[in-house]
Image 1 (cartoon, rainbow, N blue to C red):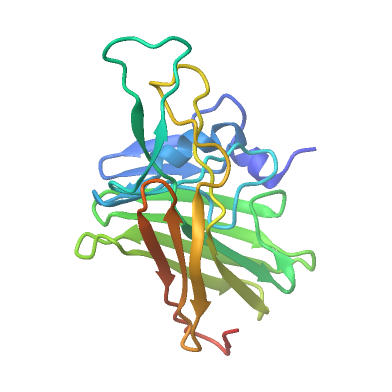
Image 2 (cartoon, rainbow, N blue to C red; image 1 turned 30 degrees about the horizontal axis):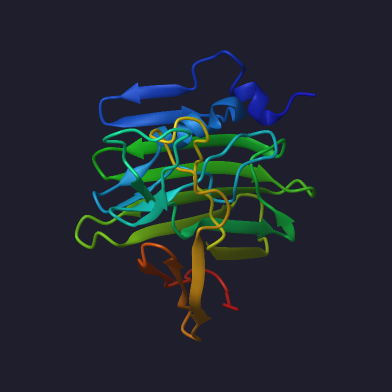
Length: 249
């Protein structure tokens, strides 16, 4: 069974276009999803965010989500089958930290995602603006089309800040829209179980919860801690709604 996206990106075809000041992806190739998350990553020297889909990957795509802070690490022991002179005993591993990139939308009660109801999907990493812009056109079961445009950036002036903007444009009449922004503290790290010098052995949940909460003005926060290094972070988000009739929960 072919889908709208199948017609846009066929297996074996080149799905990235390199322009003088941008990299563009037309369609979506699940087989290249993890590699393209690296291509569409954003960073400013302090915070780095992989270019994951805002609502999460489709079931047939391989995704490696990640948000990283410069220097934020955990400590663990390096164990060798046999000891040797000069071998390192302790390593510091850069951690995947709290994720704030999940922005899910539903239209008329139906969740929006990349799949057979998506007739257009495009991502552009703009090197002039320092933005990742993603546009998709989605059709509900009743036939109404809606265009969604996600814009993501990290700040150069305030290096600890990231911003996401979602613009929704109903193409075939009014629709009911619901949006969820999720701070996800249940994150995992890439694990190397072979040569202990090559990668982390930090499997499972490494960051421990400290505090969390929300305010009536729309701010939410989640604080977590790396147990062995003692490093602690706070991920907070502010939300602003504009446009047609809306309310925040």
